[in-house]
Image (cartoon, rainbow, N blue to C red; front, side, top):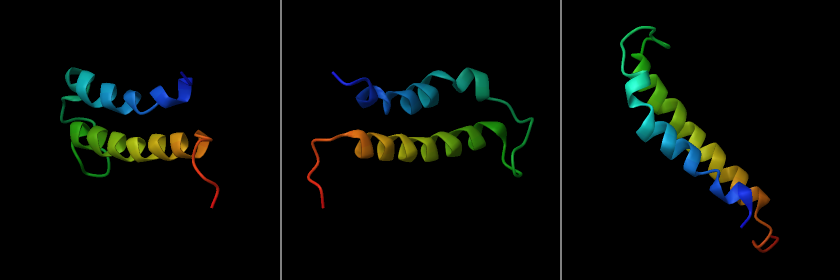
Length: 63
């Protein structure tokens, strides 16, 4: 198994497992409570990790 294929699990673990860490109102990030900013950041991070896996996976046809 290629290790980069496990990369999409990182955002899932960060969203599910770190709610106790990020569940606070201060500091606010761009006017958002920290928990909401945490969720938004990891949703964007999920897209980034999926793009990295897509680019690294050599089984895709070249187009």
